[in-house]
Structures are given as structure tokens and as C-alpha cells.
Length: 418
Image 1 (cartoon, rainbow, N blue to C red):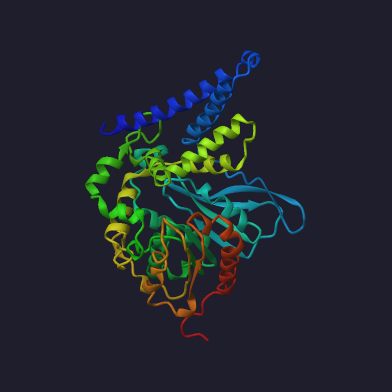
Image 2: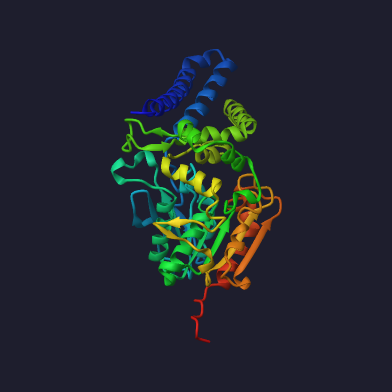
């Protein structure tokens, strides 16, 4: 089958590098080598350890690693994840804290489906748990979804979000991070027309490409420089025989990871060189800063080909969201019909993925929403990661988001009633 050999070749290369790392680590760790200390053997062991771990993480879904939570009573409470909704391409999960009173703030975190798992938002979840009931979209790796489950494109993604919002109810406050921002806005507009009572109380849209042309970046430049035919020929492959999704057309996670790393190749190369030296000197640990970051960063997932291609074509090239021309399930979505949902925009001054202005464009689309329901915040000096999981999020943005949620916690007044 077309491209299946290429997919399996990539997996073979990854597997081989993992094996080489494991072999180097094991061979250089033989006790007999301690008889004649040699720094070359230590470097070999360190290289093997870092290499084996790095390539093994590329095909492993990270755990949430949120086992307990210290509540205001000073006691540790067990945290568990409960699936509220199970669907072929993604679940809605709830972080349940045993023995704690239910929090009034109900938050739906919409995680990106852009190469990494929802666990990329682990720190965001942890920061919200003390004050909120936290729900999150947990998207599945396309390689593990049988072809019989059908397609999944930007319209299907939008309908998933609309269903999740319906199930959680109108007292929900939605926080969308990066890639899902425009589709979260579209899902809300879809509900405004189809099921107005199911709309959430508020939307907080963080660093997403509502209008990619508002502030060009390397990502938008790439989207404009290639044709859809070129993307399909160079980026799309069929899942190999090792996984349940065998034969499904995907944008492979390993290929995405190569793109991520190439954007800051020198920085990543230096980080791994430093880690190898740290391991050789005995200064590294299982949960040091490097491993914590790269265990998550290197864990990538495949996207369905139709989702990736429709995102590039409809969101970036045709700018259907920015032009208010988006169609879902044969029905035109009109952002002007959002009249009661408060919307806050959060952007980072130094965001090189979704530059300032791309997300802010959402407010201009909301022609039916009163200005009192609109808000925006530009975080000085913050990059893309910092606005949802870094110091900027913890110290500045999170308090502002919680205040925004509280300010819009009450149900909107119905027309004709005072």
C-alpha cells in the first residue's frame, strides 16, 4: 500500500536508534570495565542512556502523573482521571479529586491536536485544580484508530467540541490553547445557531491562529509556500502493520517531531550535548529539568491526514475562520450569532508560533457580542509555551483568567427580562 513502507522505515530507524542506545549503555556498563577507568566508556554509557531514553519516548504516551492534591484542609486527596465521554478519536476526561467539595468553576481545557498529547497541558491542569473542576479533551493517536472508525477532519473536530460543551452544560468556562482556538470559536458559533442554551459562559482563547495572516510567522510562511499537492506527497503516509490503524493515512508524529526540532535545531543539539555530559559526570537524574521537558516534547502522536490537510487548507490558506466563511456539517457558521458568551484573548509578546494579532482577530469576528463581554491581554516577554504553562501563566495570566471566569459566572439574562 502506498507510503506504508515509508512509515515502517521511519519506525525501523527509530527502533534501531533506541536499540543502539540500549546496547551502548549496557556494553559500557560491564563491571569489568571498572578495572581500568576510561572516560571514553563513561561517555559511551552516557550517550547510550540519553539516546535510548529519547527514542523510546517517541512512541510512548506520557502519563498525567497527577496522583494527589493538597486541598485547603491540609490533607492530600487522591486525583483520578474519569472518562466522561469516549469517542473513537478523543475522550472527554475529568480530573476527580476524592473527598473534596465540588468547585463552582467548571473549566473545559481544549488541548491541541498538533503532534503532542494532551499531557502537554499537565502544568496548566495542575495550576487550575485548586480552584476549578477541570475537564480536558484527550485526543487519540491516529495510528491506534482502525480505518473502520472513519475520517476525522476539522469539521469532525468542531462537532466533537460542540458535543463536549453540550454534555458539560452552559455553566462551563472553556479555555482553548493554540491549535484548537479557531475551531473552539467555531464550535461555540455552531451551538449559538443550533443549540443556544448549550453555549458555555465564557471562552478564553490562548495563542491560536484565528487569522494567520494578521501576523506572519515561519508556520504561516510555510503554509503559504507549499501547495496542497506537495503537502500530501511529502507529509502523508499510511500507518504500518505494527499498529491497529494499519492502512490509515496520517501525518506521522515522527515527521512532525523532525519539523519541531528543525525550527530550533541548534538549541536542541546543545541541550542533548549538555545532558550527555551531565550523565557522564553523574550530575543528571531521572526527573531533572532536561528529562521532564523532553519526555513530554519527544512523545508525539500521528494526526489523521484529513485533519492536517484540512487545517492547512481551510484555516491557513483559505482563512475560512478569519473570513467568517467556515462550514460545519453543511451548515454555515456565523460568529456574529455569538451574543452571550464572554470572550477573552491571551497572547504572548514573543510568541513565534502564533504571533500577537492572530488570536486577537477573533474579537473583530464577534460583531454580535457587546464590548463589555470582550477582553484581551498581551503578556510582555512571553513566548508560546509560557502563556499557558510557564511562569507568565502561573504569575500573571492564570489569575486574570480566573477573574474573567468569576466575572462571567452568572447566566446571561434572557431577552425581554430585566
